[in-house]
Length: 127
Length: 356
Image (cartoon, rainbow over all chains, first blue to last red; front, top):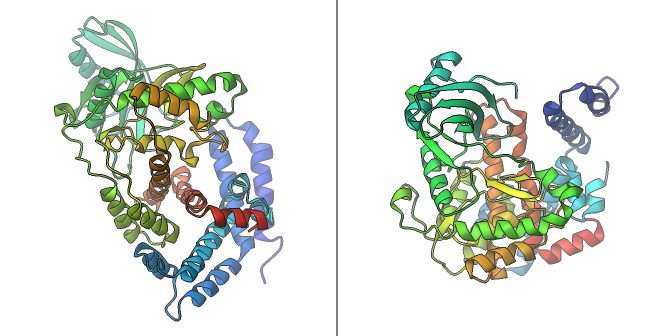
């Protein structure tokens, strides 16, 4: 329903304009601000493109861990209390959620950090 | 360097500059002080640092002086010292022989500039993290810099409680109090952080043996020391200092968040751990225990994550209209990845091998 070009594409063009044409015109002490804006635009574009898929996946894993009333907040509370420490299978299931949550957030927020830590395909998928 | 007017108060910039000149004259015993230049220095998310060039007519600083005035930024983060207390810590560090700017005067009277401040000598050098970790010209000197930092840290730890001059610092009885504080913060945070909760649980159940407390800088890292060429000229930013565990600052400097593009150099992005540890061990006479350091490195990642979230709170709750501040909270997830890698190395290997 929305008009074209897509917002993700517009953000990409805007970022190119900022870094390619405006940044050289800025005084050096404002260069960091320009990079910060470019980073913010890149995060917004990746989040817009990423959709809700990984969040649904996490919801599914939480649903497998808990019979009812699953939520990240409950998982956090249970981890605080050591609730899975007597059940290796539950502990492994909880860790799988933590990994997925963290990798997917970084895939959108800072894929280069993922790549720098060796998660190359995880980091740069969709780049 | 755009700002040239001193911190806000009900008085105007010219009045504040006159008030500062009067304060400096009185504090130094000068007949008068003429301020030639005032400029806000870059950096300082929590504090403001102002370069002051002044001419002192007599007194203990007679002649031209290059100074820094340090005062609070508009919004701070919890757990940072007040400026008068930070001044006392800086005095103690200076007296212990650390490489720090000489502390000169502190002022608690809000009538002068509208908020407390202190004045120290201005030291040459740059603290920018990436040039320090990435400049090829520093390549050969980096191990020696790391070793020097280890020696400085050992010297800092000669300052131990009780100290009348540092009586305002809270007593220290291990990291449990800090863990409780982090959990209380997370309870108030709108988004659950299960990775941090898992790491806090690990910390709570893997507490290191207690060692006698020492003075910790609590932000001892690349980005908070000045280099002039290859020489360390000053350790800066003492606002988080307090009594703590001797390995807390070691873990903080080695924490991945402070490696500025050189993740492979585990001592602050500048060197392997060995020269840093060697400098510390030779100066302190205490051998470092890798398991204790690991605990404090995990703790550092938790703490840095919480501080990053608190920075975003300055926008989310405090209303500070700063992109730099608002986006810092995103870095908490980087700390969480590192926590997972440290606490679940098998899980990390598996995901790296399979492309997650």
